Length: 305
Ligand code: 0GY
Image 1 (tube, rainbow, N blue to C red):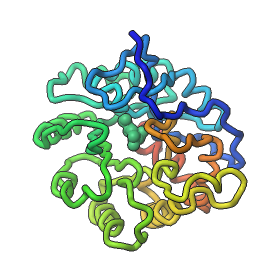
Image 2: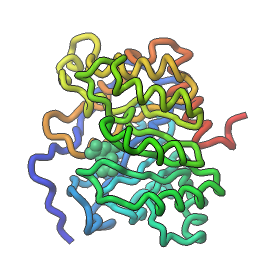
Image 3: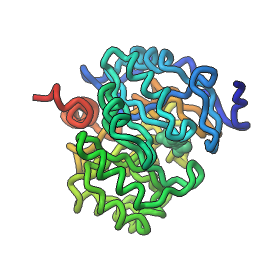
Image 4: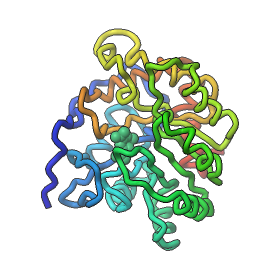
């Protein structure tokens, strides 16, 4: 089946530079995706976009090029609740990848167990309206209650303006909760303004909440120019990510977000994205927690002493 790509979308960048920042041994790229290939794993009929293919082989080549040891492959909305491409990536990772799935209420315990056996450790609930249709909260709470028995967590993706409305639901989740892309702050607003303060309060008052300090390329308004030569890439995002890393050093993780769906203005060079890390986690101790200790505790706890 042919899947024409959404017009205006940029393809992922196929010539990433070698990062200057040397990742610590055992670093985990804790947020990335595989797309298709569509000919093998068709895209979901209910999808809101059609990406260009991005295979497991290409993902693992990037992992090796950048110097990561492991990946967490997160189910993307273009595959809906059909987790075959993500599961196939885990199965062919030689134990170096774990995953986050999207499931519906109709998923059976046997299916959850089978996903656990190949390395799935969480489910993703998406509230970004341009990406998904609404799922009733009672269905999501039921799923969260069921996956807890495998020790899985819930990954939530939402935009900052929607946090007040989602607050009661998010604070009722019974598992560990991992927030994608810092809850998508509006980085033109102050880092200590009411909107981001609410997110910090969410993490402060709820020790089960973790955060991916990811996606400067998605959150920036200033743009990527600084990445290409100047100091301090995506500088408008730095205060937000740095504040979270400084305040909650043991509950942050990082990922590339390769292959960067839905970008129309610029496509990042993943090597240069890695060079963003020391701007938000300047000390070796912070880097070790962000890139190794924290994601290992969440995704490979059996390997952590
Ligand atoms: C991301 C961000 C986006 C897309 C998805 O599942 C998805 O389609 O998460 C986005 O468009 O903001 O994490 O990849």
